[in-house]
Every structure is written in C-alpha cells, then in structure tokens.
Length: 212
Image (cartoon, rainbow, N blue to C red; front, side, top):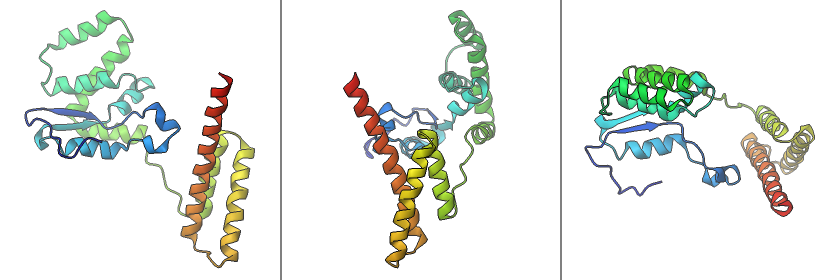
C-alpha cells in the first residue's frame, strides 16, 4: 500500500473499481493478497471527498458478460456519465463498434457503467447479487465442514478426509489436556486447513519446476 503521506492532487477525480484483481503471486503466497476494502479505503483517504467515486465494475461486467473482462469499459461509461471524458457519446460508441471486438458486450458494459454512475444503488445491488456475502460458520463442526469441502474441491475426497482426521487428533489432544475451549479448536481447524492447502500448492509448484 502507498505511503500514508502521499496525497492525490485536490483537483483529481478518482473512480475506483472496488473489486481488486489479485496478482498471480497471491495464489502461492497468502501474504501477497490485496484486501479490497483496505485498498479502496487507502485511495479514498487520499482523495477529496467530493471527487471520490467507487463502483464494483467487475461485478457489473460479470453480470453482463459472465467475466470481468469488460470492467474497464464499465468504468469508462461511469466516467463519461460524470462528464469526465471530453468526447461525444457517438464518438465513444463509434470507436467501440469500429474496434470490432466483443462489440455487443462492450456497448452494454459502457451503458451500464453510465447507469451505475447515475444510480449508485444499482451498482451496489448488482455487487450483492454477483458476490453474495459468504455466511460464516458458527460452530466448530460447521467450520471443519467448510474447510473439508474446500480441500476436496482443491484435490479430492481423500485429502479432505486426511484433514478431518488431523483436526480430530488435535482436538482429542486438547480434550486430554483439559483445553476443550472451542475457540482454540476452531483456530486449529483453520490453521491446519491453510497449512494443508499451502503445502500442497508448494509441492505442486516444486514438482512442476523440476519436471520443466
């Protein structure tokens, strides 16, 4: 994240896509993950309040086309609607048509970017539909089930079973030691799931580097 002392010029208008696209490194190194809210907040804090605009353009693109590829065109429509692009509507739509690539999708993305700028609540509704908030597990068993499901999708059922057995052994040790507090056991469940997943990814990368 940028240095906290860095400020954006007061006359600058900022339009942020609140869905941060992760770098490839984050697949293998969780510390490289960007937090959407933190990135957006960092930029917001450096921008004049009346010149900051935010929209989940990726969600709008996904809703329209099935992918986030048209997010930039959504942002362009958003900026145009705010009067920030000194071109005519005909010039922009004409250039999209002249380009000849995914014309229908890009025209729709541009139009919906304009709509989201005119009605910010519309963008928020689309975001909730495309990226619904995950319901967090409330109990230890629910948490174990969630992580086991993810590990099975990541590899196979045997891998998920290994994880369940590992957590059960750790939980039994806690019980035997008189440390049956569920919050501690939930941390064990989460950390072991993360360790299993990262270990497998590191092994995969290492094996591929050897074979290549």
